[in-house]
Image (cartoon, rainbow over the protein chains, first blue to last red):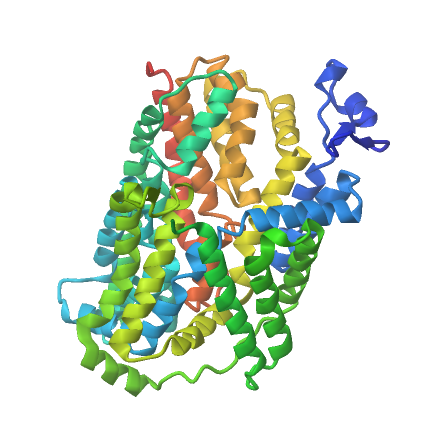
Length: 260
Length: 319
């Protein structure tokens, strides 16, 4: 579908008119339904980068460039858009970067070693059971809007992962690197599952506001409370499925311990 | 009032200090590019709003190229030996948990109890960015507490910050750059194009097929974009509102809630959701880049199927 004609309008926005695409793919639908398909090149770049296992950061920049070029933006306009967006989204990395100094200091003085020690003393604790408790706490606290109670930098790395590892070591005497990495990965997975399927049950969460805004724009009025309420069945299902996998993790640990 | 901008300056200063420390770290093979990377990021936080957009864009591209070609590498951080850490852990005991718990607890208090507190007629914390501002205060308090507890200086805290940040390397900036890509996609109309293709080429005559296409479409588009927030407007606008609500009379609240959760199933399965799936791989020092995703797929797929059935059976509920 060649021959796209793309003109920036007076306000500097890009207007699209793509006659070949309109004629080829719309099967006789009226011309006013013309949708520009060129920006999909950006999506294609991501998929190709994904398949080729290229470096993620480079894929993102390539996709930005491809999307801009597909919209026939000159180089400087692309940089303008990227720069404005880069500055506008500066608040995102703060949640990751700000707590690192305190966590690093505590690690220097033995936080991880102490967490592992304390869990090793609790005889009833297994890695799976510990993570089920963490899943429950994470999901319920997120449902009350307390999403900051967990997180990979502030909770998983310094506390939960060493505790789960410590529990497995206490149970088996020692564990293989493969199992160690599997336990760490499950810890991160547990934090994600708890956060994702808990936070959407909280009324003041960003996603609920986003959904309400989009439905409102289409003339559909919804109460945020109802959206939050209808998230509960999925939230419960997510807990059951993931907790079952955590029980299986305990079985894996027992199997490795028994094999020795 | 404590504002988000104040913490931009705090983070900017931290990044600038890290740049100087990296520059002087002779054990880092790539100390010049590593230092340049932190210095550029420091500029973005310190004077970002005064930069010309094109200059900020050029900085972003430069940072991506440095990170993408392995220019951010690790140096030496004067860490204590394992024995020293064990003996210090025995000496300090449970007190080590106190600064770690300050971060979530103070953030929580800031975001709830202190949200309406006024001093001299102005609010204490900026309401628009309440969570991040609370987290910023909590982080600074936690550093102070950690310094006091371990009798360290804030400079030592900065050394440890650099150790953790450089061990994550490029994963530090990926979420930020993905957000930029999302905004650019929205500007270029990617969403409209995707919705158009789905509705044109897939028959949505059966209610069950329509529900399945809606849920799977949410997950698939999230896998590509790495962000459920980007998928929701596209798939809800393309299938959810015209077909599920328009044709089959679905309850909008049920459609929205279960649709967003289907998108989250996609988030669990994609490396594009870097801060959830790739950052922890770096933080936990896992050799397999996709280890967290592999741990999540057995939960995400059954949950997606469950979502299709939940939506199919619950969508007729009266609002």
